[in-house]
Image (tube, rainbow, N blue to C red):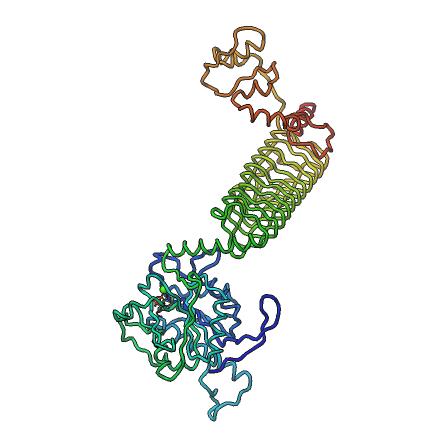
Amino acid sequence: MTAQTVPTTDDSGTPQDRPRLAAAVVLAAGEGTRMRSSTPKMLHTIGGRSLLGHVLTATRELDARRTAVVVRHQAERVAEHARAIAEGVLVVEQDELPGTGAAVRSALSVLDAAAHADRAAHGVPLGQEGQVLGDGLEGAVLVVAGDLPLLDAGTLGELVASHVADGNAVTVLTTVVADPTGYGRVVREDGTGDVLKIVEHRDASAEELEVAEINTSVYVFDAGVLRAGLARITQHNAQGELYLTDVVALAREDGGQVRAIVSEDPYAVEGVNDRVQLATLGRILNDRVLEDWMRAGVTIVDPATTWVDVDVDLAPDVTILPGTQLHGATVVSAGATIGPDTTLTDVEVGEGAVVSRTHATLSVIGAGANVGPFAYLRPGSVLGEKGKIGTFVETKNAHIGAGSKVPHLSYVGDATVGEGTNIGAATVFVNYDGVHKHHTTIGSHARTGADNLFVAPVTVGDGAYTGAGSVIRQDVPAGALGVSAGAQRNIDGWVERRRPGTAAAQAAAAARGEGVEPTGDDDSSDDAVVPATEPATLTGAMPALGAQALRELAKHADAADQPRPTSPHSEALDDTFTIRTARTEGTDR
Ligand code: UD1
Ligand code: CA
């Protein structure tokens, strides 16, 4: 048995010698019937990565010269996926014969051909008739079932290392389980402990069925031993299949040494056969991912309700609040707080940002920005540094500049908003004319009024204002006030004439100093009625609040309820002020 040794680099960057695998073969041809799915089993995901993807990630670290993936059931779909996630992978279609032995045989014939081609390309002397000499592939071949998502490169590395160190013909990764039903049993030789054979459950004797050590479908074979064995296996067994496991006894017959390594981590070698196992292993994987992040300095308040995909990247001092899912290639920078109840998929979050009760996909949230609660960021949303996408706001394909705010109840689609701009509450960027999508541009330091419609394509210049309730169909030049709403008309006495006897009519009469106090028996409104002549006090307006809440509210009342400074350039200016200003000025025209 020959296995070449090449210098490689381990995680810590120190060079070390590790035997290089001639090939890795991943078995992914099985149907996975017990999944009861139209999706091939290998394409089901945990931690945001397919089962096949997990195995290919683990084998990639071993740096095999070639990696082959064997497909058959929904071959095209699995093949396409394998090529997409693992560059340079050889996709091999299994022939009609059933069984893991048939699968590896198909792979080996392709790997042999590739090895011949390599040799020819390197100018190795040819035989008399110009044929490439030799059998093909030489060295150690890793064979792995594609449905072992928690299999790690460390375990595989140990298997390969011991295979090479012991000079084995075959090295089997095994595990000991409480219930070995259905698995191949590992039959060891008394005394040496070497493996004599692997017996499939349905072919096992009563004595063999007692064995609790099972084959995990992870092995290293010497290429020559594998080739010789696969040529001799037969379908004479209970399932009428070509068993890869039969190669073990044949290797022994030929004088080879077969040893086994017992995996200490039962999950690393647990296969996914149904959706219960999919969920179980998904949970274990998630636990491991979260533990790694917590050890790396991330606060995860409730690991039980937090899900983080394997490709997510979190910086130290990120805080994740309960009910949060981070998917795909999401990246969160230092000091950001995510959650509660937030789902981010392929989202980049800047340092110190706060993202609460938010659903976001393919978006960027700038450093120090504030998103939510109850925000929906669809693909292409980019929020600048210290910007805000507030409550009940939906964005899509929208660039909102640094310090700009969309605080309340708005839709911002196909838009560019400059820096330091405030978009008034209840604004809709009307991007769709029923046929085409159009773009809206709002400049920097603009103040748009509440309840605006921006009918795209339209542009609002830097420093411009718009009046409340405006439908902006034409460009607003820089510094202008755009107003579309007509002047307000008050029809005096309308309520008492047209709604006589209602609580509103009584309140109107009372406000004029006539009639009686409102009885409150008008079922048209459950809202508290506050006479306009008496300014609402905290206690008067909100009698339902408890004493503690009132004390807290009073502490914040100054900040929340006092009129704002009136400088139009003040950064503290909010949309409420903008609305008032715009209305006053708008009616002056
Ligand atoms: C196989 C082993 C058994 C082991 C068990 C561990 C054989 C004969 N038996 O059982 O000793 O305990 O795995 O789970 O190998 N596959 C193909 N082509 C096929 C059949 C299967 O590529 O024709 C692939 C499957 O996609 C899967 C792997 O091989 O990735 C194992 O197949 P599966 O049917 O789950 O295992 P068994 O053959 O029952
Ligand atoms: Ca299986």
